[in-house]
Image 1 (tube, one colour):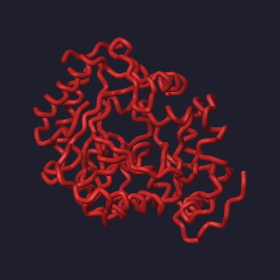
Image 2 (cartoon, helix red, strand yellow; image 1 turned 45 degrees about the horizontal axis):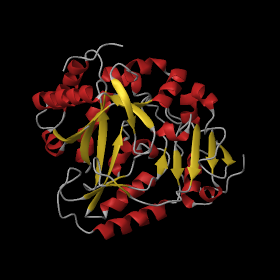
Image 3 (cartoon, helix red, strand yellow; image 1 turned 30 degrees about the horizontal axis):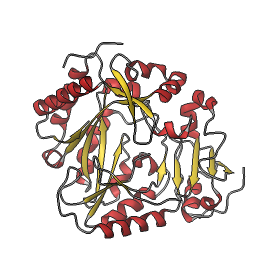
Length: 375
């Protein structure tokens, strides 16, 4: 393919005494916790608060109804600060597993939404409006219990599909990054433990953050972690506050050795001058770095960039440089998403050529990397 042309209070209940208190990191230095009353009263909620003993706790009727966060346009200028200093505790009211067909068979009920990272193309803030710090759902026992029952109702998988040849796959991180969530609560550890005991199913989540504490969770092959990768030149601009690409690549072997199934998300693929050469370099880096064991179990998803007009306007308020890569009206067309929003994606012909070219690059530079799907 020819390279594309150049062209965002109340007092808390007592917390349990023995709780780890992490020191502030560049991702999280929580100053304010907005919490639903039921979340404050839960064991998981008290555990989370114990990790941030200096935070002010503000009681709210709903994690969706926080005027200081949701719909507050002034937060655009504080985009990263809100993610760093704010945490929300809520209760997941509706428990359901939605059918899926690409990355997983089912989308599991969320144990969190939002993120402390700030990827400029992320779709989650489109729903939450100007701020999307981490919201932790504290009714984890209800969620894991629902998942056990749902898996039992499916019975064994009798026919292989692109998600997995033998197991039902449940995406546990549709609107969040589980590697970062694990810095805040034990929800991810509980999910890994749940699927460790489900021989017909496995958990799956994509991540852009290397959290080596996950190496101690003993997944026994029942959790698939998908490291999202792109050329480092793109990541430095649009993958804000994430682990660097080299760190993610270097972590693959360690996670395989720890008992995870490790796949790769080649995502998002951004078309711009020099994109083919940079992707070829990344694929050669993978080929040179990964062990035979990691390569033998690897598979990939190829996802071309999808963007959103509202998010474009938000980004212009805090990170306009990202829009030089993401907003390309000369190459893009409107696309109505499954949730009814109008997004933009590469035109059909541009997208088709980009997918074909990246598959050619994979076949040439990393022929061991099976592509599960590309779109």
